[in-house]
Length: 429
Ligand code: AMP
Ligand code: GLY
Image (tube, rainbow, N blue to C red; front, side):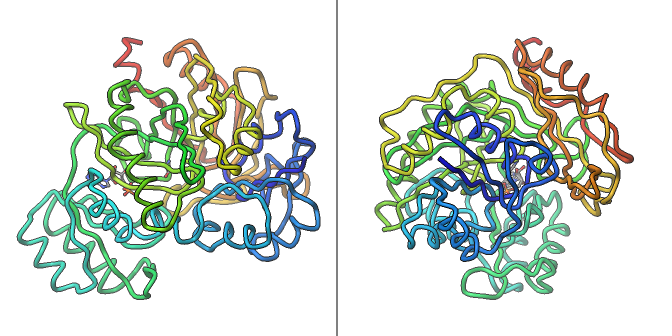
């Protein structure tokens, strides 16, 4: 059977890598893919991104299953497009993807269905937003309502910073994002304290299967300093998600979300990623929903998945996820992102990459912002590679990942040296 993965990042490389190992999979296509999928004979890259054109190509090619990686094509309705032509695709419809594409939609949804999240108000009028900040004080969080590629959230430690964010997002609409009715809108919410974790599940509209737990490192620099990024590294499992936190997240957040979407007439299919903030008492609240897997969380999660991902996806698109149980490798998986010079503000492109070691059972280098340029591998985006390993402990995984990373070279490469630090402390190494 032929499989299509939509996207070009490290997440898509990892999904394609795992799908290619499926017993019934004859070929994995990636649209558009990256330098890693272009140079590996297990994959074929397809240079089509527009949903209708992609669906037409997939129909002609007799693609049996399509998996969508990023939020962009989901919000653009790629799932609706494929389904309306009877094609099997794993992901949420455009309406369901609003859980990520509109902060106001997801916050209103959570309020209506009593799903724990930070208290908030929604504003399209700047004066009202400023007045609200003045009554609430700082710290306070200002979020643009719309897909803003990770740049739409300002955690303001002072009132002045919050006012500035409102002007930036609302008055001047500098991000240029529009919510579904057009125009700019912001959500202003209570600041939550605690430790974050990524809680990712697969849904078939009714049934839910949780993936292995994971934690991401959003800040650019060691010790969780510096600007926010798309994610500089991740590992699985995440010890902060104890069995009790896991049960609470399922009971209080995931299941009410799936039931709520069903009740609202928008059944949810696809990956659902709840960004959790877990307080000192182990109570999880929802920071945000993503309607896709995390990047770089996918890379370590796929390293640990032992089940045949194609068969899992087949069940997920048949509405029979209740018939399977996912198998996980007991080892720790850890991924270190190597980013380009200037990331996240202005990543430089075109640096030549060398020294990537061949794949090993315990170490895979997934590509993201790479491209093949006259036969040479070069940087082409902010997050370039994700060195992903499996080991007996977090500490050993760190050693192995950094040993591999040290062999890889491109000018200006930057990466954190402390991925997994929270888990090292929890487990005493
Ligand atoms: P989001 O895109 O909503 O996940 O926000 C990006 C990051 O901002 C999160 O990963 C958190 O680190 C932080 N953040 C978002 N909302 C809050 C909140 N209510 N309280 C504290 N930190 C937050
Ligand atoms: N790593 C965070 C995200 O994928 O949203």
